[in-house]
Image (cartoon, rainbow over all chains, first blue to last red; front, side, top):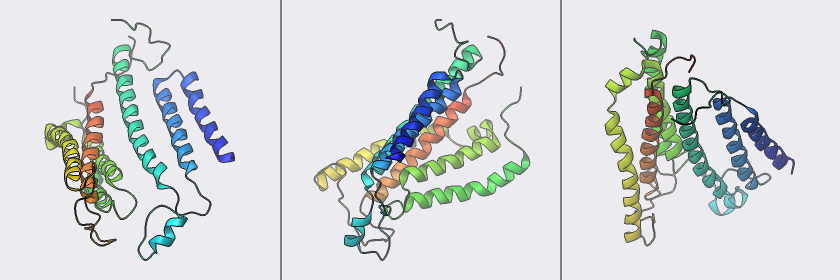
Length: 116
Length: 149
């Protein structure tokens, strides 16, 4: 239970960063932290005490070893999630660069003229 | 104004040697994707980081001369088509989308696991090209130094 609460605290750290920081780059980093917290939560659901990674090794009996493995499905889902997060981060950075080109600042309180 | 000419001689020399090892390691991760941790995405990211290493050490102009970015874009786009083609081949031979239609071979051999190594290679090439092109696109944006609006 504690690990889930700590995971939620990590999500709160990300939300705090997005809400309070003025710098665009810091906001993008905070969004990344939020994504990590979500990924970590789903990975933690698959955790089993004393279990091993879900990879067959040489010499192991498949029938027996499968019982001691963690659930590989969340890991496969998280791989997709990481890729999507990468795309989101790249797009946000590109938008931040365009904003910097136009306004010469990353401070969101100074980005006012949003038209034209 | 001359800019983006890369880093110092030391960084360039180290990069010239180490980049090929990075590429080799990425290929190893991709080719052993069905046997060990890693696979297409992880290996593709490693190869893209190798390209990124060159971009950082040698600068944008060198990379534009050395690599054919348009060809990379075409390869990256064609890999998605190849993946779809393999999926449809699985549908016609194996009964379901992406179903295996090759011999599964012996467990723990490099040439085994049917179509999975082929899909790993396709994903690896696609990820490496796409990630490098994304960073390269961010790098070609011309950013002037700060100042008032």
